Amino acid sequence: MEEKYKQYENEVEDQLKKYNEENNLLKKAMHFRNAVQADVDKDNAYAYLRDDVPSVEDVMEIGPFLQLVKTGTIWAKMGSFNSNTHTLLGSAVIRANDDVPV
Image 1 (tube, rainbow, N blue to C red):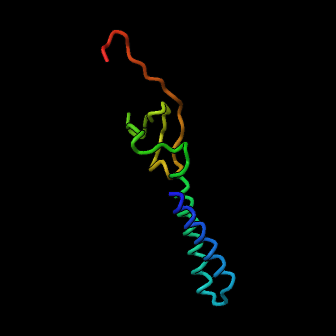
Image 2 (tube, rainbow, N blue to C red):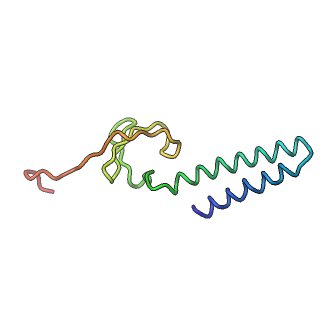
């Protein structure tokens, strides 16, 4: 994923360079749009590189729009974790009850 991030970063720089060198307004707009899209893609790739965003394997659904992560954090979310619409509600500790065999 880090190589994708670098690829998008290079694409942003390349498109902005083309934008600055171009005189044709339509081509200039196209290069600007391509730079913005590469920047969005770069931001999305960065979300996967962050340590605080849990992976799909670490998440368990415990209710509608409520999830428990293996690390013990409890999140409320709308959409995906990568869309920045998740909210940390708190943390939980799960222990075995002495009366119940594990």
